[in-house]
Amino acid sequence: MAKISVMGAGSWGLALAMLFDHFGQQVKVWSVFEEEAKKLAETRENTKGLKGVKIPESIEITYDTEYAIKDADIVILAVASPYTRSTAKKLAPFVKENQYVVNVGKGIEEDTLKNLVEVTKEEIPQARVAVLSGPSHAEEVSRFIPTTCVVGADSEEDAKYLQSVFMNDAFRVYISPDVEGICIGGALKNVIALAAGMADGLGYGDNTKAALITRGIAEIARLGTAMGAETNTFAGLSGIGDLIVTCASMHSRNRRAGILIGQGKSVKEAMDEVMMVVEGVFSAKAAYQLSLKYKVEMPIVEKVNEILFEDKSPKDAVRELMMRDGKAEIISGNWKVK
Image 1 (cartoon, rainbow, N blue to C red):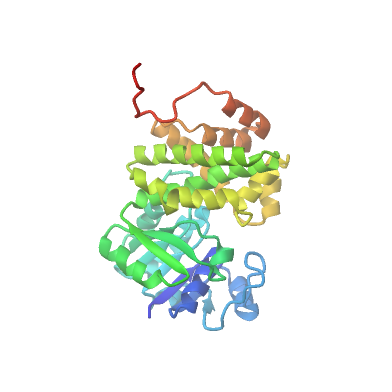
Image 2: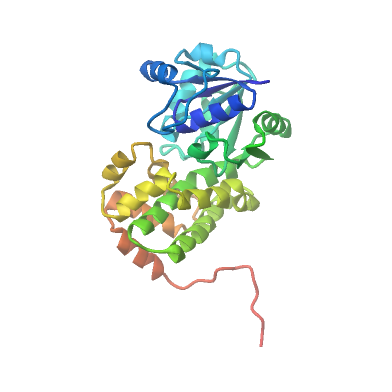
């Protein structure tokens, strides 16, 4: 049995806490907010994100940072991407040398263009930092619906240890050395999901959704490989897998926000109605800046930025994407000579 402390009491953090508790791990959940921690401990329910799912009494809930971390075998950093650095900085004084810290957020830091593992390593250099990602809506994980994810770590030893702790008959875990690729796939799929939601809001159909998913993963893979990631990662769980579930499901806050924007609401109105952090809005600017830095063409990401920050209408953006110059889909193949 491992001692796991989940730092972050949002829907994803609580879902993981309930999953690991159900399969025999000793779990604590930490909230930075004292009132939130007290309310969760009393009501045993997150009515905002996981309504109807009861938090077992065996899960301890606390707002004491040192107490949450000090005896943990694994610390899970489960906060929204804009708060990763500030939270990691808060945890750093209490993290021991070589203690495991696993980031389960998805995003790119807007100011530095760094992935969340890089941010965590900067703030907690004494930790053994890893990432857990994949197609995994909290609403389903909290109900033990079969789910598959991937752990990325710098060493095979670390990856296999985390795999052995996390994996059970409701949560299958693969391992990978491609931390960069896992982080890029997890962050950028939220931007593409916004576009997919906008297409839904405009009343477009399955053809449009399939096009956005397919061309979206092509954009993500182009950027990821330019940044040093493995191409095959984007054909896996943290690539096409996470992209499919985020573009297709109403559990996805990014898709829901996109639908509202496609229906004519402003970005602020959409985010207010979703009532949770819409990661794609925060990652969109960073994704576009990375495309410029690495000289990678990302037309969907570019149009999402124009819609979010330059008041371009989603309908105009779709028309401009459709009317781009014709291109080859597979650039490595050879034509037969007649």
